[in-house]
Length: 385
Ligand SMILES: Cc1ncc(COP(=O)(O)O)c(C=O)c1O
Image 1 (cartoon, rainbow, N blue to C red):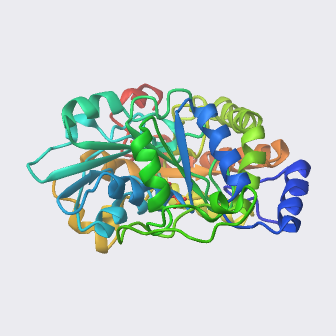
Image 2: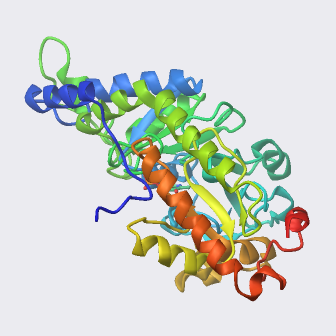
Image 3: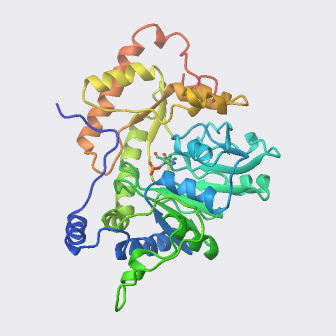
């Protein structure tokens, strides 16, 4: 039995051809395809400048570095991948988590407690929902607010209210390349500095020295700064191809989102997620999450949990300096079902049948009469119970 993956990238024939051309071109490093991808990306998301990176994590790290942030406190959400926290440690910062909102899983501006030590805030557009960057910036004043739009490629409005935004093209993001990231900004000075920081402080890229009549070998380094974090043309050519198809891929993801929403409407054991444009993850709240996940796995359906909060990880417990009742209650019932543009509707129907069967079997026991012990029992869905 072939497993239905929970997330899975696809590529079209044209992009495969374009990739082969790059492989035969003799230029695999950062070159013309990188510049083309950056230009097209900036246009798509409505930003003046875009600078590509080797990953979303590198992009986050570079956002702190380009503003010269070293030490102090970084505030972020615990409901994310570890990248948003570890970049604090890369830059000698103390990481503090702030609780999220139950409806959109984004950091709650009211739960952000600015201290004299706070130097930066990273807000994630969780699952494709846009974080309230305006409210966070209002509260933050001069403190740097970075928007992490790794799940929001592309949701209209993503990156619009932030001074600096990062994106990820990791293998299972809505715009998958394999690995890669992007930083967008409207600030030319920051853009120029970022270019240098993506390559260890080297002032001119190899490509800029190679174009034109003769190769110019000389370059300068004026400071020990930056990381090796630029994108190469092999990744960029895939990015250009994926960008061409992004609206189509997201439309397919939204179609799957609607099919689940319709199928699960009214089932009292499931709370469907608020819809998003990208549907980066179809993460529902459900009764007996682990039991359902197990049954689906036995039937060749992969599921996941987005996210086990960071402060549930041994190392990151230290980031939980304040209570986080919302995320603590929420995550234990979360389950991500397969959604990707390569998912077959016939496979999705099978998943839906398995979910419904699971709850009919569950419902035949005491659960159908007794109270359902799930964390959202008291909320607005209690009328369904
Ligand atoms: C919200 C978020 N931010 C950042 C990252 C890091 O991106 P990358 O894997 O490209 O380094 C991820 C990756 O999963 C993510 O989910």
